[in-house]
Image (cartoon, helix red, strand yellow):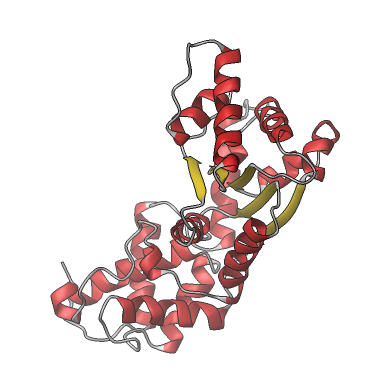
Length: 294
């Protein structure tokens, strides 16, 4: 819609997690380094967490693209609370067909695959995205699968990617054995203002546009109201480009961003930008679910 007006080759703030737009902030660069270290150091379990919209999936996809052919990757990305067992999902992710539909056959097919890959000079990396949806029972299944590893032979590595609730879950004493096997972990926090500025300029440049399209005060406002969360920064910047295009503006200042915020606030559009707004929204939801008092 606005690409030609601003000279873009593509949308700079599209919501899909495109690794081509990955900005290596200090945090995201460290996250990638830790994931690479996990592979090289043969960590049995690795953990990457971050708030919603922090860029976990983009980092993950960039990391997976960097792996060589010796690592067989199985990605489980549609986790939910109704998971009965991790085994059929792992089989599907790795493209393994068991002999029959029994749980024993599922388990044996997975173990055989891990051992076969290792015998051929490789290893298996099982990646579970949205891992905060897993139950303690499923996490225990993953731990038992890792028993295929011996002290000197690592045929299976597991990478868990999820929201901060996953860390809270692993603090439970019932999961102590699992937590002790997590030897590499990293948490993605919100972007700082300097990183947010570089992030916005980077995406504008990758899209083929002018990196100075947003003035510094506009960037500061976007950062403050998005709380440094990349996904919310993308939403605010994308909407600001639409508003500027409608008015045939060539630059984005605070007035444009403020209009976007005001209009979204009037419509009650989600997400509500800013911590206070988010807290009020949660309070309204709790009140709506609570019985009336009187």
